[in-house]
Amino acid sequence: MIDAVPEPASTLIAAAAFTGARRGELRGMFWENYSEGELLIARSIWNGITTDPKNRKSKAPIPIIPKLAAKLEAQRASLGKPKVGPIFSNGAGNAIDPDSLLRRAILPALDVCEICSKPESEHGRAIHEYERNKVLPAWRGWHAFRRGLATNLNRLGVDDLVIQRILRHSNVAVTQACYIKTVSEDAKAAMQRLETALNDTYVTPRPPRPGTKGIM
Image (cartoon, rainbow, N blue to C red):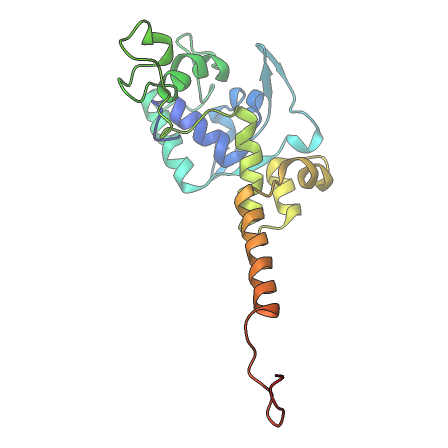
């Protein structure tokens, strides 16, 4: 998805995917809170109102991986290398609403016709019916990036307490219950392993032990 949408939407999605920040926290990302490979989540902006993050533990720094750092530096350069102010800003220089960017840039890039590549909103009365290009990833909502980060870190073997600190939850039970999801591929693989084990136990012929005769 990062490669399928234009800037600055691409960098905004990367920030959501690689930090697990909430929608209001994405809007509240400022350059003065970003340095030395860390981004401090210091505020949340919801419906234009600036508040503290969701809970006491939510106000904390997040490590920034090199892939995201490179995109953030390109974003800074495109804005004239500011040292303060919102990382994602609109034409007036204010923090942009992620949902505004979603409507203007993200959905038009993802929801296009597989035949003519026109966005669904511009398809109109074409000579063919609109059929979404399923090669492109489907939009699942801003919160899906937060859940996805938790699930991927869990699959990589990261301790649940570490994932809790990255997502800045008040306690690890919230992380485990609501954010770490075993995806369907994992479930299928687990059941396939069970089937293999059963087949190996009950079906595969076993060579007779030394000194015993085979059962007729």
